[in-house]
Length: 611
Image 1 (cartoon, rainbow, N blue to C red):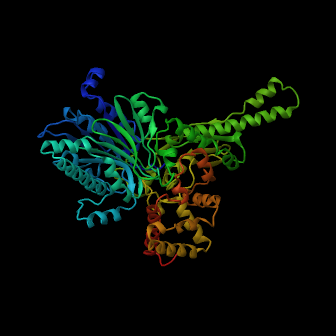
Image 2 (cartoon, one colour; image 1 turned 60 degrees about the vertical axis):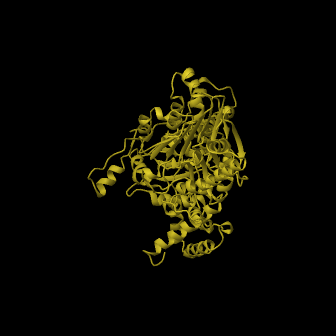
């Protein structure tokens, strides 16, 4: 319901044959660009704040440009970019990026790809990525200590300068090799261009980074690379045939773009890099040892497109296995319950939920037939088999309403009408209404819009279901969830602690977090987890209902969340669950969570003398 921002989407293509091959076979010189456009449009879900592309031409003569970049802001950035490209963007290497900011920084200067220029081809570096680094302060100090003076304080720009510095060292190494072998002039340049080893650059640059990332890059000499973080947090998939090497953030993007099967595509493993040399030869090289198995489960629940073969089944499973919890919430009264979903991203989990209830009803029908003790009559069978799962499109999302010059209550009233209902889809005062969502984060949309509009149907009870567990902790690896006080689960926990006179636990946790922040990052623990220990999921659910219920609403509300165990059962290969459990995969995540709680408490004390 509340749109979560996710940083970001990447697309890369390396044409492996001469450009004339694509002109003759496909009838266009823009084959590579067309494929890049498709890959970016198919990942539009991953970034609508900006987009950028880059291209590298091989074998250009001095005095001619060989590295091109185009960027734009806004949800129409892809269209704007590709309306501007022309003959100069006909090359062999392509890179695209879609941006969602999770740092609050905006403007064209923050839109990827970032470009570092130099008169030596091999020292030119173009960089983009799907990432968020948790130790930008440490990296900034490191590169400034070496004498560099970054112009922008952001993880992407600092990464560009640090990796560019290591690329410079690689080029200088090759220069010394070439001169020691007696090469001179252009022969030295050719030697460098043909022998740059990107793996050397990555091995010396990447050990310092803490975070979730897929880093993509092009060099002016024609090297292409992409590397995945050693914890496996952010995803990357690649495909190769005799014409192309391509990489994207999501598997179906490659399937659709190149008309291939799921099994034709491989996943880049944690700590590995895909490297394509200037001559088109590719290899997978391990850069860092794998440090964990923490692939982001939110990719499966929400962010990635649901048409992936495995994601589709996982989302259905997430919905299906909520059946027992929903049955308890409706007192097993399936006959007087209508099932629906909000928003569209929850549709697949909704199908799974329906499947679970169809199975439940089938088992109930079998039991009723067996209990008859005789061969059923036509009428008896008809009565039993007429049981069905009642599903309706109960709510609709309208176009974004503009508030113009309205203010106060008038503005809030307009905001509450973002969604509309299917009138009389529910029998007033008789039917329960079960609505599934993929996640409940802040609860703002529930309070300001969803509950108000669903209440107009006058159901007996509203059961709001989340196919993901309670979101309790911030994310620092590329999701727009960086502040504890944003989460309704956290706010409910704090309110319960206050009500039960457990102020000491809040104070103790604050002091413990301060103590942890004095330690080396690798030794820190996360005391914030202690705040939730006194309460069950159900207690937190009830408090959340109290906090989210709109004023004047009388319809009973119950929240049902996925369990952590259910999450792992449905998504067994994606074990990253720190936003639910507080088990951060990297030391930087632990540090930032402790800092977030300290900041929260100190902000509260600025206005309150005590809890």
